Length: 487
Image (cartoon, rainbow, N blue to C red):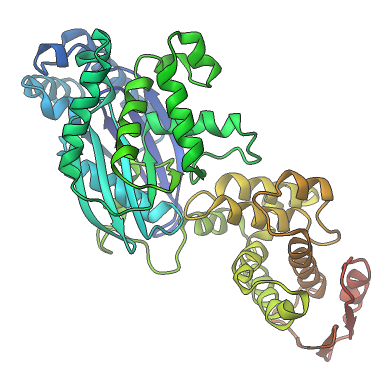
């Protein structure tokens, strides 16, 4: 597969392009993203789905610029897919031929089930583990659903209930009751769905989740994997549907470019909740574009990453760890310390994973600037540890690296992120264990040159070295529990 790949997604409302760069076999990161609200389906649903000349020209112009951007990044492969607006259009061949002739770009029109599948595989690979979930991707012309059961996609479906379609057929005529009847009739095709989690994909869902995140004073500025409760979701949807003026939408956190389509989207979501007993809401920052890319990247592995592989972790290690030996030693030592002491500190065993990963990633910040390593590591983990982690995972890992080496997490930090971190004593104990590991490796041995024993609050370091630097570093550490280190 090419090192840099561009993916273009032509939707009813927007056309988007992402450019990904691989850093190793399965690791990648986002290099560039572009979006244009061309609304290719504008006025099409009023004319039996026929694409109108002006929206088609807007789309063509945007695609031309997208290809120019891709060329500037030396993209070797460009994958372009189109969804509802084009697959419904009687005159789609005219547009496809025009694009191919003028831009030498081949557009692949995917059916609704394939669109739903692409969204689902992006969620399966790039969100925290999903066991019983329904994905929903509300577009301009259609809405796609996928049922995920036990980490497998078991069902996909596409329904003709997009935001632009509903706007032109019902909302422009102020026929909201007609829209409800139409949506409910389409939703009957879902059958009986058993899912406790709703995973939202696409611009409409992200706009709603973004507004909820900001209104709730959420401590982490990250939308992907943002989760919240059903009651909050229901109340916000109802508030959207109750608005009469645009300024009311602004007060609810909706941007002006979504004023005309947000209420149709909210109505779709409300009717889905009326039909299915959902308890949890998860926001996906990934969708069809990522699914198209992953289907190509993982074509020889059944569209799944290898077991226990995380692409964000591997990307950070690939790009920002120069001394992999030290990173691995720190990871190994921290796990051993945890195994010896977690019962003494009263730490749940599940936190071993976050502690070990914090140890492995701790050195990445020095790749930016040695003297502010902790600050840069903290920021990079908060920002780039994107895929496959919950916000609680990310916050704990980032916190441990921020305060690693010589101090415990500040009370102000623990208070700010209280909803995302374990209890104070657990976080501080984990922080101490990471700092202790760094201290014990102060002399940077090729291999760990000592053994550990732990008994009654005393850690014994058994080895042949004098460990002068380690002894000095350990003296500076703070532990709120009774804890002694003997060399």
